[in-house]
Length: 269
Image (cartoon, rainbow, N blue to C red; front, side, top):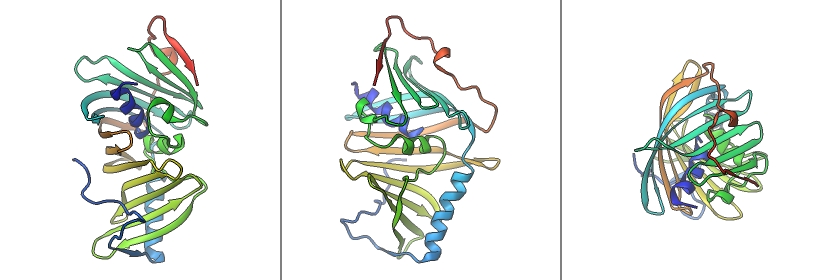
């Protein structure tokens, strides 16, 4: 798979200013943190709950992506629509210069379709069992990336709080969650989540997510600027959202609205 296509799979998870200067907490190194008290732990949990409670029921956005994949720089633009109640999403990634579609992602219920028009291939998968590693992406649970792509702080399912930490000299704190498959570290700056580190316990792969800007429309919030880093895949992405409309009536495009290339190869995963 081409480098840009591989990077787009990572972006799909993320619609889910350079690298952050601070490193998220790692058990293998000593950081200036100490165990948090119950009040700080409660504040972190409430900070996540406030964002997730107000995540949009629908949206329409445009976006640009400045990325590096396998040391090659690229730039994309695109648009996306989402409806939470119907569990529908459409995201089109376009070449920045020629404005032609590079990849189209469609979610209808549990049905996932990933179309590569230039290659004349469309993959059909199931959201409940999809493995993004099959497409050259990060082998992370789809639900985690779905949460991020819909304006929700992703939380591990069936997880426990492994540890709460607070910086000794700064207004930052860390919430560390764990389940059977992953360890998730959420960093807070004055009780607002700003960084997420996900570690696959089996593959040891790491996905770093930097929430650079959150906007609010009415009661709803959305991530308007993100940075995503997958070192194992040699991918770094800066994603900026424009023309964000939250909770307005939106018609999400489906496969019936897409002009499919002739002699399209449909691959069922």
